[in-house]
View (tube, rainbow, N blue to C red):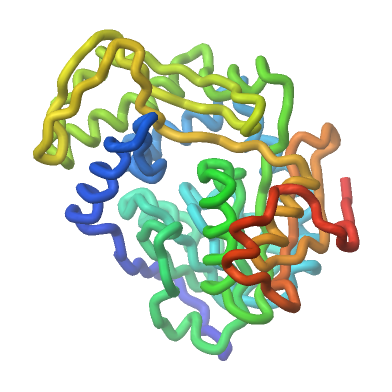
Length: 349
């Protein structure tokens, strides 16, 4: 179908219910080390702080990826082909502008967890691109089983867009599951353009996630503020220090709030004890080499066909298409994150 131009952004709200939050938080607090879903960081204040992180001099990922998207927008659009553009974890939706200009898709569908932030982003984007209908979906995209029915999606080829190296917030096993889920959501004949940050010097990575201005620390501590507000928590944010540490073997940055002392807090109707030095993991950021990511994509039912990178080869944009035949779930679960024997994806610097 051909969608009619619209100047009014629409929003579908599928935000998780409070009961779901309690279940997820309780499960995370029972883990060792304790770890909560990364999307909990992104309430309105968390989203604002994350935007500030992206502007810090130590954090180059956003600037590098934005420049790459701007420089190669025409090539990216030609490689993607026609279809509705679906962005996972859209945030402020500022990176998508060059793609929208080059693609002129029949619709743009951003998915994000923060309803207020998403509404503002959709309205701003709709004003800048009045001929492209915008339909926002507030949801936890990592748990979305299917896209909601809507006339803008009916009968259209779907193009996924997942910038920001957000896949790194998931463990490799979770990332395989998420990529497989994206394949099901987008359907046959789809394509996925995904941004992947690559390993770098440990000092450079640790500085990027623990900036001198303390914005990353404030972003992490805001999680405790949200837990206090939304789930009856009694956290004292100042009783936790923030750390960002490179872990070489899993190739990831581990971000955590570390208890400064033995303490007890209430959360979600239960009491929880923290020992001095105990970590609450706020998020991980896994870094993949191009070869490792190609293997991960193949284990998830995708075929990597092209790659674009910045001049320093710090970050890549990968174009994936559904593989002709899928591995079974058991095979995919057992696959290692190394490149299989296949035709190498085409790289363009």
